[in-house]
Length: 463
Image (cartoon, rainbow, N blue to C red; front, side):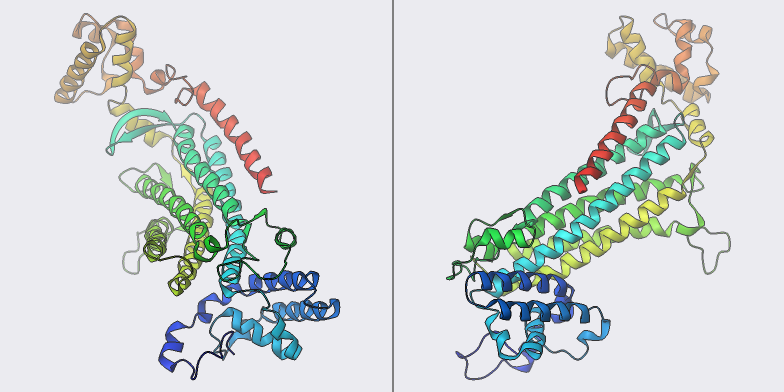
């Protein structure tokens, strides 16, 4: 069945009908479509368009359709244009001519917006729960090795020593921002468009606030033309997914490196690694590689809808049908990646000796020495040159920081003193970095405690 007609002498061609159909993907919206239609049925009754008995009959029929739709075979053989026409056809099979009243004062334009918002509201809630779970696991992993020292990198070169929890807290901050972005996206999703009509507003006296309350929306949209042409809320969701995937991809890259034989810092569990069909010794980080790979897919979903929307005139255009598959895919990939990242984090075993040795054999202490000279009155530019010369001579002589004694250090240049040799140990320089946000042990301990409190607040916000 079609929700339109009369104006046309013939129906659409078979080619166009096949090309334009969306039921094969928008059937994911079936429960949202039913919930929205039930709320609209109650609005029709309040407006006097349906009797209470008619409304009850329709609501019950929609309920039955919702239960039947749980069967994967429910859609087999259906050739309806989209999920909306499918549901109305099923409704008509159950209620006859009464079903023809359901679209009184309602356009598919607002219905599509509503269904998408309802689906996204649930999906965003799922991702928020998963982000909170990953954040919790990162804190657990940080507390397992509170004193472990690892090199921090710039340009993938050893730069300065940091605590393992400090490193993980960097990712905590990234995912905490992702959590906040998704909450902001959810707030823009959580707005009811019903009552907007096709673009000019409904011609029937619906109580839009009551409809919004019925569907548990926080508010109603303010302009009917904007509703018809708006997919900002969908782009907000896709951007939030893309940022989360970007951060997951960076974490994956780190742990792929750190679990390699060349680094050997961490071991990944058997449950998140795979073997080789040819090489018996291999234990590959496939779970992390898939997270890294699927991030490109989600970025593509964002780009796809962004480009689709960029040149559209007001208000609704059929191009906007192309929002569904990117949304469905982005949610599926992001949800899967978050779940996988949590399982990977649960499996990580750190060998603290390996990164500690990497820090000790390198010159990650160089900045600590230069800053100590500056604290003792040496101009920093001069201090930088002195320590740089110390590093150069050490590299030429194949000397590690620990090979220098206090006496040898003092003999290298008059600005050095023997007691400064203590700073040649990576853990000592950290003690000068107790500024908020730094890697000093006390600062990191406080940051961990604060992160736990922030996570509790996030979880309370989820309700």
